[in-house]
Length: 308
Image (cartoon, rainbow, N blue to C red; front, side, top):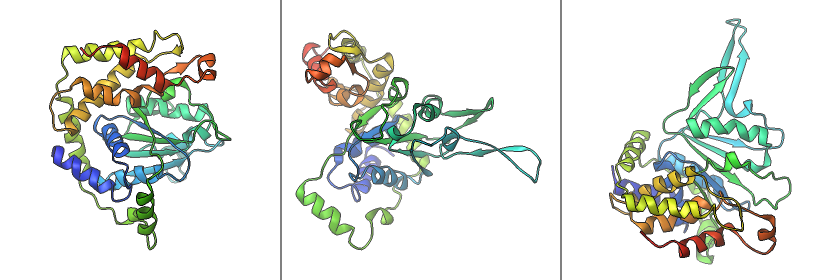
């Protein structure tokens, strides 16, 4: 299965998520690279439906966690429960043991609970009481968050947010698109009719194909120059880490594959740089007050660094 299979997957998801091809493609890049996606938008934009539709489209085991202030780490990973039958403590797996894990409103829970996802997202395993359990293959976290100005939200810790391959948003639909959305939900929600268009084995096969996409030394150097420039800006308190360089390389390989190429070009990098970098750049407070944003910093970096 190649590019045609991915186009079928995109079309299948767009039966539910109308007119948001860009967001759908970014989500699929996460799937193809074993990456995790952070979706930031106001409530009611279809963030949860986007994740559910992807899961149903690939026959994935889907679990959802609703983040709240009283959520505990064991509510995510699971823990040991006493069994009267055996007289022993048996490990009860938490919702993280899924192919697609949706963490809804992740910034409404505490940093302590958010930290339960760190090992899962980086090493694809869970350690509880000194015992390690592997997560299913493939495994992908899709987290949604409300804008940080909303009441009752916590800013994600730097170590947590850096583990997301990309940060995306869905945005308001156009008038005609919104009319289509509400008309299609008059009887039942379109997600109820979604059928799989590929299997988990197909997904793993595509992930292997992505790894074979070629990246020239010139493009790799271009990526590193762009990322390292984020560390040198006077308005930036903390720039992007080498993990960001790896993320851009992997995402660019997936985008090139989706475009029908087996090699990456600089335009792939330019296309994906904002989504990969914007959540990794922390600005000085004075720069924020003066109206500077990570997006503007990235725009400046792209203008300053010539294409290799």
